[in-house]
Length: 327
Ligand code: NAP
Ligand code: 8YV
Image 1 (cartoon, protein in one colour):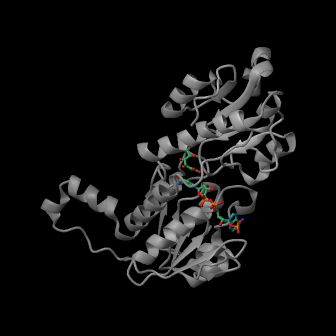
Image 2 (image 1 turned 90 degrees about the vertical axis):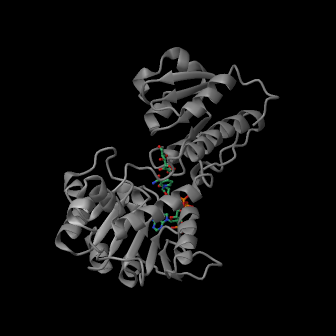
Image 3 (image 1 turned 90 degrees about the horizontal axis):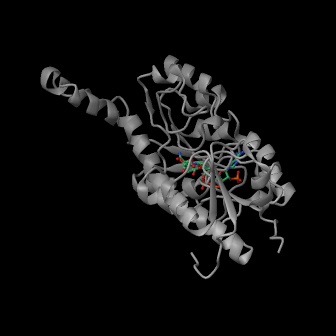
């Protein structure tokens, strides 16, 4: 971003996972300290005295922040930051940044891929070919489901929700949505409640953030409203779904099929979902291309550089938008 500042005396902690791309940049520019995990017990007096920033590729809790009295900024990798205690950071005067926009189109592409995989059974059809069954048994079965004639509902019509909606329109599907607030300037049908949206569509795509306000929002009532032709796709957060209710609904035909990129307790996936042939499952790959992950990593480091050179981040989360640099 800028090479006119000397950041070499500024210590940035990187606990747990690390993006290689971000790691190279942070190491070149800052005093980078790798930690095994974001565990307050791992903070030595020396680190406590000097760490001014965290580059976070996993969650950061309040206790870890509180172990770092000089902490000014947590630059988090990912647009969703439910694993960072941003409310606590806001109260403590610590800036938190995330990585919006640079991943929007990639995640929307993945959502459409997952939807088509789920409805047209493409992964199962490919397995059928690879297992030699096409030659032995003839063509793969005609899929009971199709995208044709479907109506889609989006839970979480934000940046990624809008990008998914544009793609769905190009596929010829009408779109409706549910957010807490109606979005101005868009013509998509708005529903005040998630259950009302589910009742009005047969294809529900969740791209809502995690956190208390969405916890298990996609529950038995919502799935029942979606109905027996219903397809549910989750590209947002696993915590927004009651996974037990979803497995039951898929097993007993309350809904037809589901496509899931995210799970409540990653990387663990409930056996009840793994056992279901009508669930298409991905290991949280929404943004997972080299191109997009590098763009996200660059935004993490750009936020650190902007903060330590101008006292302003590029992409503050709302909970810390009020936080000002101390000097
Ligand atoms: P965004 O622009 O902030 O959009 C989030 C939308 O959700 C907003 O329109 C918001 O509207 C709505 N929302 C929030 N809380 C709600 C609630 N309690 N009830 C109903 N609607 C609610 O975020 P984004 O950039 O589109 O990203 C969305 C989420 O996608 C991220 O938070 C992340 O969890 C997930 N994600 C997943 C992947 C992946 O790899 N699978 C990749 C990127 C992002 P209101 O505030 O009006 O309710
Ligand atoms: C990443 C995501 O997979 O941006 C998000 O909210 O869920 C994904 O893009 C995740 O942040 C990687 O840890």
